[in-house]
Image (cartoon, rainbow, N blue to C red; front, side, top):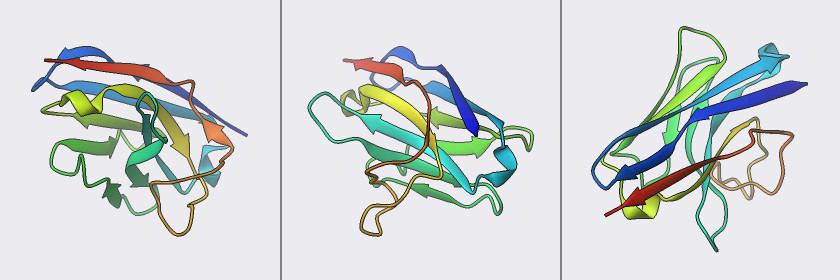
Length: 126
């Protein structure tokens, strides 16, 4: 079993930065990838960034690829999402996740998964 604990988030103005961290514990050696999902009010939950643990490769949703960066801290199973130049559309609840099943071959969509954090709110204002 794996537990994911999130930290960070909060409120920011457009153009500012926020940082989210996700610490995995338990059977972390079994994980292949970790990442962050975002769910805006009334919208489907979608991943914005993925970090491949064995090879450090990253994937980004088109909406954030030029502004967000995901990285691993100190080689541990802690993944941080640095969100720069925040936009109003970045507002939502952010969830850390690991090894989620891809929906129809799309890494940023899922209909399940066993490992999720509790969610943390990010609110961007003008």
